[in-house]
Amino acid sequence: MRERDIEKWLLRQVERLGGLAFKFTSPGNDGVPDRLAVLPGGAIYFIELKTDRGRLTPIQVWQQDRLDALGCQVRTIRGMDGAVEFIEEVRDAIHDEEEGGGAR
Image (tube, rainbow, N blue to C red; front, side, top):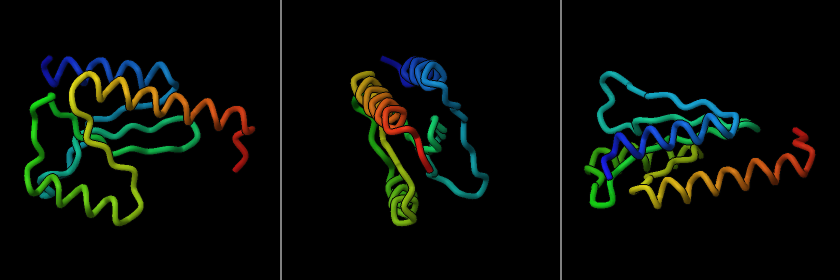
């Protein structure tokens, strides 16, 4: 499956969960994840999409490590199976927060 097809599906699913999905570009900062998903409850994920066989470049690994060190939620999603797993994970988290009253 092509990356752009996975991306379209993922973006629709994020929106169905009540979230927003943005294409992220950062001029002068090669290798940053290419998507931001903002979900109900305030969860924000930096997402790099890859096909099943796609690989991260060294600069992508470095950028993800930098974001992770700052406490950001960073995901590399591989293929449609990875996209489905991600959506299930965030759906469960949203559901758990709703059951807990969503207190902040």
